[in-house]
Length: 418
Ligand code: ATP
Ligand code: MG
Image (cartoon, rainbow, N blue to C red; front, top):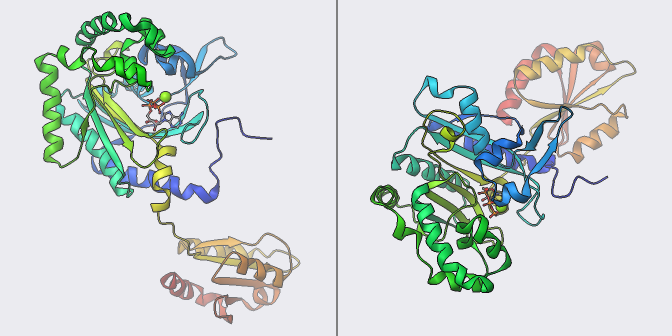
């Protein structure tokens, strides 16, 4: 049997990369007082319809939705922000403090055509800074994405940033954009023609060359921004310049979700051609209020972990030294004394593996060689009887016996050797 289309197993050989990314994220984000949050993989479908928006690609065609036995409309979460906004309200996280800094790491689900860097179950690492309308919050959040990428030795990327203003400004602009584009309707690509009625701003994002040509002369969103929006954006740019974080202003960057306002940004990899967006984020000042919570201006991003791994996998140095004690037991009965030895090894926090094969001594030693083991503990009938352990060093083929009462001293030595 195959795993469902667009899903992948993360096998033990690869899990080290995932654990590494989790560890780096945890270290950097904890340092900045971001706290991890884990929300359910299932939410009511309505949550995503109300937040991401009815006319977005995600809600329109990418959601894994079903009705459960209780006739409830359920969706496997396609992204993290809506769930976090919901959890923030459900758990009244706003009561304890004014600002909540949260991060998450977990699977997301979108029904898309699978290809490199695009899966149906994929993973996002994301952060949300809830409760501040200040541009410096946007900068904190963007800087953390950059910090994480740098710590993972990822250098080949560009940060693109834009301001999409507030809802009134966008509505004004939208009207003018439609007015302009309608004249060229026949020349637009099919998707864009449709979006003219549903989600006109997304036309800016079209990859179609003809559409892009038409857009060159279209009114610009920036012309519709008021002073407040412009100031917010300029402030962010100034901070980024001060921090020497290179960025490119992309006036056509609008992002595919309805809840954003003011800041929108993406981090794109330079090295890969397709699916090059590693990180997407922005500000969402109305989302929480819109879901019934208190006014909570917020900003956040999500990194696609599979896409990140395409770039950084080779750069993650993995420890390949097998510092494991291989325990070989050899007797007709399994003596209880083996647990006493294991307990002592555990106390010293040395990794070990008990051979469970029931095969001969020489076969077990051969297995240890295959596993690239350095040290075997052999505990046979003789050893149990004499309260001893035979210790075999596989690299230099030496062997010695020690008394059980010397075990702790010996383990100390092994620990230092490892
Ligand atoms: P794209 O334009 O590539 O479809 P998106 O705008 O739909 O991306 P977001 O919703 O902003 O993506 O999600 C943030 C990040 O999550 C993306 O930049 C990407 O790295 C990752 N991502 C999104 N969809 C997928 C997917 N189906 N498979 C793997 N990663 C994904
Ligand atoms: Mg998408």
